[in-house]
Image (cartoon, rainbow, N blue to C red; front, side, top):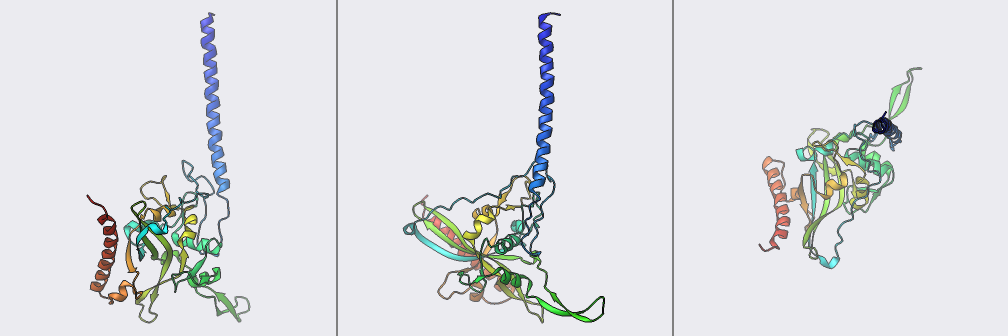
Length: 320
């Protein structure tokens, strides 16, 4: 056999061995990824008594392993010197989760790696685990801290006792009961925000100060809605690092997500202003009372007018 033929045969053998080795390496890597993801997913994330659900998948639930952001930290805010804050306005805004743009707020949270939760569940989990402090809803200045037990009572009501028959003896015995909390019952969130114009950067910034889930107050006799009241307030700067660790559901792209901190920073939600800072501390509903449709429309227009004034202030500073 000629020397050229020997060289071709040797090259062919080397090529076959290289292809087999590459195929085995890819199989092992894929298997390892499955094993690693199943081991990581077995972490116990439950911290509470059925107030939220974050059950992870026990197998790799996607063709491509999803990015984990358990160690993610939000970007620091642009620093604003006190002397550069030449104008500002404080407003209170409400987010109605029933609006189409706010659909991520009602996503049940069954993510591929258990890394998506409803916002109310994230709040409760952070409070119960002691990562953030909840404050009583009667005051949005964060003056009255609440314990985890007080938050549970606010959500489910205090434990009560009823008399039930014993299934064995038939005697009446006392049984402690507590109402179940349904996260889907939270339909509205209230934000306390400061809009600030920084003359150093010539930009208008929005800083969220606090966030509160609202509960409906219903007349026990007529069943009519009488109003809304915060369950508790959470100081947003304390909550922001925690929100950065949870994904927001993206209905348009399964493999591209943003965090809850990004959603609030980029203001990817729809809300309406219900109060601006004023000398009497009145809400727009107190200024425009009434339960009629006409009064409701006037309140929405009033909130939109406040929003436009904030926007127009920044625009009026520029010369075109």
